[in-house]
Length: 128
Ligand SMILES: [Zn+2]
Image (cartoon, rainbow, N blue to C red; front, side, top):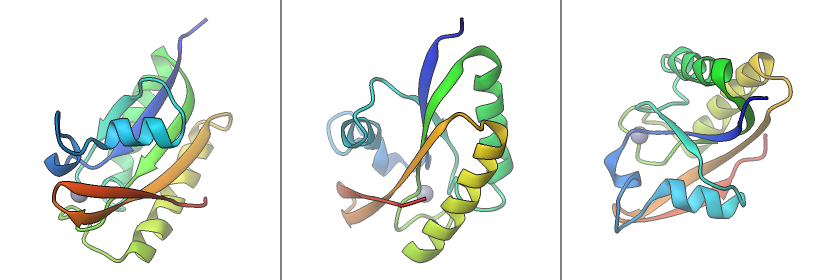
C-alpha cells in the first residue's frame, strides 16, 4: 500500500520559506495539525495560469503516494498573483474544485497567508 502523504501547495516567494524567520510550512503543519508535508510551489499557485502546473505536480505525487490531505496557501502581496484577498479566496476555491475532481477522496484545506511585514505573517483559514 502506498504511503499516505500530505501536501502543501504555496507560493515560491522566499519570504515564506525562511529557516529562522517565517516559515509557512511549519505554520501550516501547526494550524492543521499535520505531520511533515510535501511541498509544491509555484509563483502565485492559485493564479489561473499556474493551476495546470499545480495539478500536474499533484498528479505526479498521486502516482507514487496516497495523498490524504492537500493544503492550498496563497498569500497577500504576491507578485505572481497580485490581487485582493477576496480574489485569492475565489481562485483558491476553483483550484480546490479541480483538485477534488482529480482526487475525490483527498481532504482539501486552504488558508491565506496574510502579511504584517516581510518577516511577520499570519494564516487565515479559507472556507472551501
Ligand atoms: Zn507569491
